[in-house]
Amino acid sequence: MAEPLVGIIMGSTSDWETMRHAAETLEALGIAHESKVVSAHRTPQRLYDYAHGAKGRGLKTIIAGAGGAAHLPGMAASMTELPVLGVPVESKALKGMDSLLSIVQMPAGIPVGTLAIGRAGAVNAALLAAAMLATTDEALSGRLADWRSKQTDAVPEQPE
Ligand code: RP5
Image (cartoon, rainbow, N blue to C red; front, top):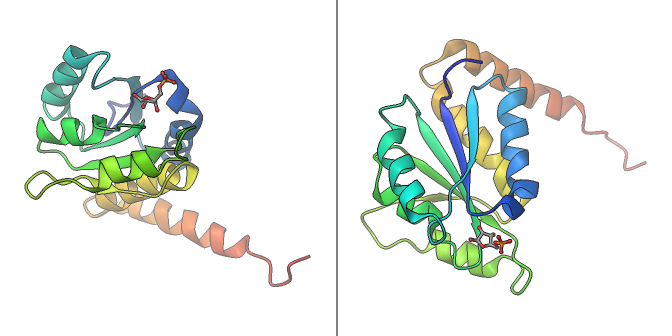
């Protein structure tokens, strides 16, 4: 496998059920990636090391998923110049509204590109990462166009 261009991080193994959709989408587009559990509050040193080392290792963007008091994407963004895409994981107590508001309401100065709650956000984070990488990668641009074209072809005209 080529060196990863996209780093997927998540606060807990329990986030994988959501974040695997980002990994699967990157896989389908042939984008080298890695997936790691990196918790802002349970493994702060791991987060520090990951975020500070990301750019130097050749990553181009980070997709960060977390639930509840979801400070992982914002903390990661504070420690790297790479673009960070945040995926709010659906929480049990508040259905992911807590995750969404924690991730989307970054004060001016450190941006996190925030996607939808749950699977849709994970898939779209991968597609957005792909679109960003495709601006300087013609082959990937073609694969992304094919992916979208297949999606269009798969939509039936009749509901049944
Ligand atoms: C967050 O707490 C994680 O991102 C996860 O969504 C949530 C719950 O984690 P677990 O208690 O399931 O490990 O840090």
